[in-house]
Length: 145
Length: 181
View 1 (spheres, each protein chain N blue to C red):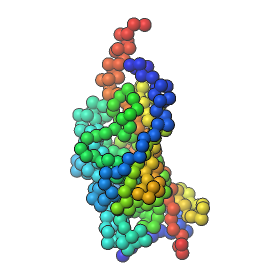
View 2: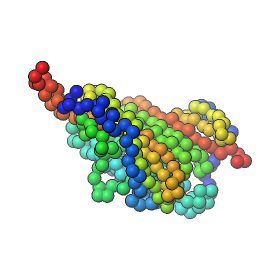
View 3: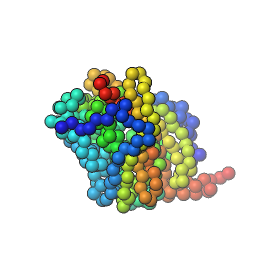
């Protein structure tokens, strides 16, 4: 059975994307390295991270990007197309944090005959607030396309 | 200026520099996608289940819309498993790095079986102080990812911060204070 498919006409500005949360456990730290193949030691070697001046390990850009992309692709269905994503690594997700990822529709318009949706997406935690703000541009199918 | 580092000379030499295209060692494969999804508990069957993906208009498993993963498939890969800085060619004062942001623009979907290539270009290099290093060097670079049909599938713009350790900053400050005026 196919996953639910949102259509452009049904989306409303202000609509929330459900998002998800992940505990940053030691297991998640290892999954970060395995899944991103980012071998830079600041993501798994505490002494290396501290020598660089950081208080702790922190999760990688590949990890945060995968999380923000999941917020969007969980919502946009099989036929949605993520046209553009930008995000900033302003603060860190560290072991012990609960990372919460969310999104919200900020604009909706037609351009070049396609139905565009603009989103704010972000990762946050209780310690730092929003750590990774981002914006995304998604093309959704119009019913009957 | 620490250790005679000349940011203007670096900017003149490296901004606009573009690498030759490099073809990924392997085609886009299921298992790196599975590991990537597993990292964030992403159970989207379009990325994981060939039988499900065959029922969609795409006809095959898609690579998630991650610039990071696209670059992984387009690069030589971590074999041998050593860390390679994203842009080792630009001289910097410090060797510690942190990605500060990324922007990915997508022009097409990537499917399992595609074979990606990448060429990279340096867009900007500048110095901007951070709390850890008053002379941190920032590198903005683009990676242009193409598929086996020479179609551009995405362009990734990455902002990389390079900095010294607190020990290195203190040592450089000590050298400057001890140097003749």
